[in-house]
Image (cartoon, rainbow, N blue to C red; front, side, top):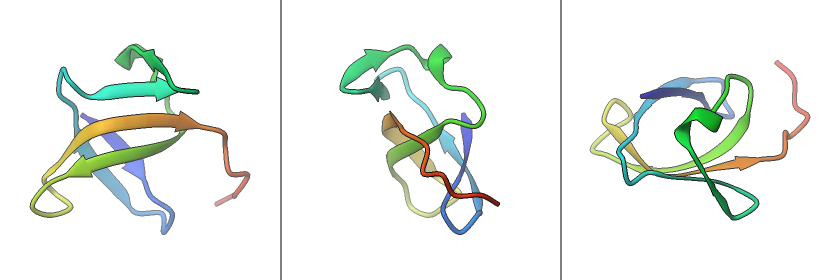
Length: 67
């Protein structure tokens, strides 16, 4: 599981599965590449915000926003 803070600064817990694809610049990465503070885009599904399963996580350039 990972915790992700979305744009309105709400933290959501997202489950990972072995098939969750993690990429940066379209290159596949291992889950160990995920670090606190990275900017990511997470494609996930679930019945509600407490039941999210990540299908894909893309590491993207930081947006430069603060706070």
